[in-house]
Length: 161
Image 1 (tube, rainbow, N blue to C red):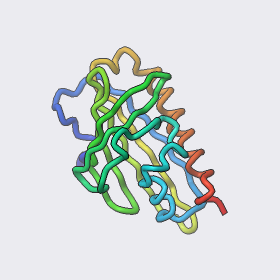
Image 2: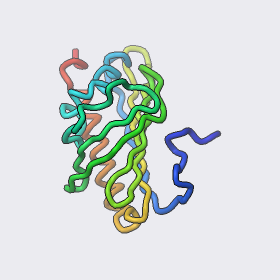
Image 3: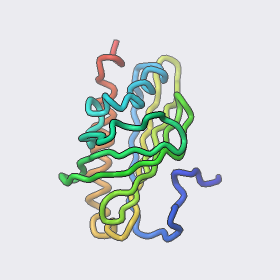
């Protein structure tokens, strides 16, 4: 299987890495879930790590779009500059970001329709020298954050019936 763009190391340097993932089956159509995932004004309602978009999110969501996000992970604030690297409306959003201390972040949101439900899978990756100092704790904290985000997403009034 060929590597997808979000998993390619843009620096070519490799380095210490922490990978995380979580998935949930949500009782809502993929189109309704996609609408919530891509409504940047509402990220605070479901994303457990999101604290703000200094520039309001991307003007247009498409491959190559760039935007900044303020986040909190492991109790620490961080500003990340994201670039959209995969974009298939209604199905897939892959982003790579540059964070503090030379850490590169990658997130991928995939929606898989299954009848009246949708499987939502979020995958994340952290690379960079600073990751080696905290890989185990980062993996644990980021996995818990993804799971909490999926619980909050599933509980949004727009997605519950």
